[in-house]
Image (tube, rainbow, N blue to C red; front, top):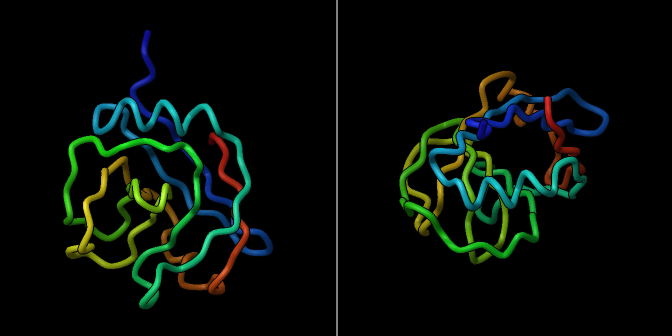
Length: 125
């Protein structure tokens, strides 16, 4: 039986965690590559121009699946040019093509407490 979703914990060192879900139906090939890397540690940072998106470098080198440029608050998405996973903190147009993967389902407000560069552990919940 195929896995339909991955429940993730984004643990911010020295702070709290937020929890999200990647829905395989949205981008099966991208999510499969991400799932092979879990658990992993990275140094995330806020995307250039403000605190609208938190960016986590991945290193999976994957193209886009079902690209869009519109996201909602709490969305988890992948951007191919930066090869990074993003968590959206403000709804709207991102100005680049992205692949939506899932959503933060619990404790999104922890991202308001983190610094510009924050280490993050991503693991299965």
